[in-house]
Structures are given as C-alpha cells and as structure tokens.
Length: 105
Image (cartoon, rainbow, N blue to C red):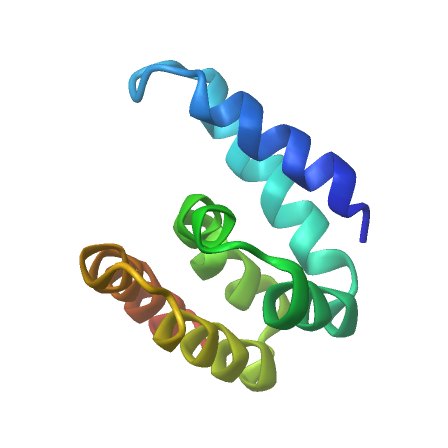
C-alpha cells in the first residue's frame, strides 16, 4: 500500500468543505488503497497510523470491510480504536466502525 499517497489524500481531504463533492473522490481513493492488500493495511493501521489519520480514515472503513470481507482487519480496526487517546474521537470512530461491522456478510 502506498502510505505516502494515502497520507496525501487525508491531508487534502482535511482542506475541503464537508459539502465539497471532491470528498467523495477522496473516500473512493482511500478505500481503494486500503483494500489493495489487507496485510499491508493491517500493518499500517496497527503500527504507523496516527490517531488523527485513523479518525479521518474511519469514514471509509465500511467500504473497505465490504470489499475485503476481512474479519481480521475489522478486529485490528476495533483494537486500534481502543488505543485512540481522545475519548470523543474514539466514540465518533466507533460509530463508523459499527457500520463497518454491518458490512460483513
């Protein structure tokens, strides 16, 4: 997975207004990158991903889980969320992670 590209997309997305249609393109690109190789995604999420990056990626985890159907990745996402320092951010992330859980067949 191209983590540099993923980080570039996250940084660009942060500059956009919530109603900007370009956000949809960012979500699509993020989901594609995160779905390419589950083991690389797990390694990134578990070892390199900052709390802020995790927060900005949470909104695409339902698409990633839907595409990959990886229970292991979902487990890592939930575990990673438990290590997020900010309790409000952790709670917000969990809303998206529950959507991701629902994406498993």
